[in-house]
Image (cartoon, one colour):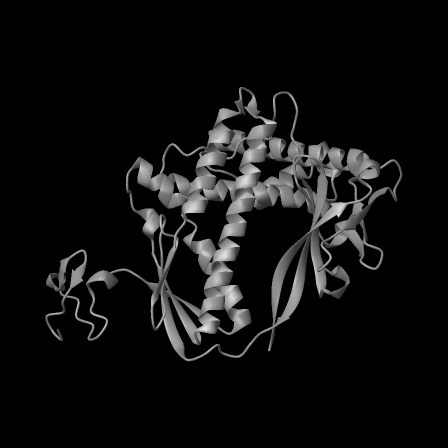
Length: 362
């Protein structure tokens, strides 16, 4: 059976010198649209006590001159990203009243190069010749047919001519140069069930995962991830500029995000591969339902809100679907005092942290 998944493939731009000025203009325009919309949201917030929704912001920004610096769909995407950032802030400030709202995109007196997303109407892909045509907004065109033609190169194992559909293309400044991210819909063949075995996985902050396979327990510590966070976070704060993050600070932030993503992909791929090898067709993930709604104190809350248990589950779910492993969420509430044999949940069954004796079935 085939399933459709979304994959992002990165391509380096071969004609960087020819298109970098044009991409710089688009990236600067995306930052300007963000800043104007952010300023508008701030004024409405002061007047009404509410942040305008994405539809209101789009309607207002369409009348602003900078809106036409980008293709209409690209401008809309900037507003959608700002709206998502506000929503994340709302969710975070429920437990952290001091959480900062999304800020302006400024670096001193200049704007940084923001990511520009080109949706269906904003690009034309030529996979046979490894080229993609990116639309400019009407304000940046010298004539009506003006566009950027980027020649790209992907990894040798990536063939974009074989994907079902390129959904959108993103021009991303990686700190040194522009690169292209192709978001594609890909069809993958799935395996039948990996087996009849059942395993459980307990997710944690210090020890990222403990998997109880039918025959043994396997611990996956997070030491390397913790070391990366310590090193790159310190590098970020040590190089923070008076007028916003420095180049070194942005590099550290981006590098940490890349290493975290690589760690979680490697971890989940290893766990699913172990399930297949051991004949485990069902993997139950202990799900900390509503855990972020609790107040654990300033230090613990910070760790709790950076705990990527939801991302780990998502990676396990789609990797498991491909390999024939059914990944389920199991609410872990009350499980530490519930007998796995008979279901008795008497509190006295838990003698102490390391000893559980059921009074009903022994």
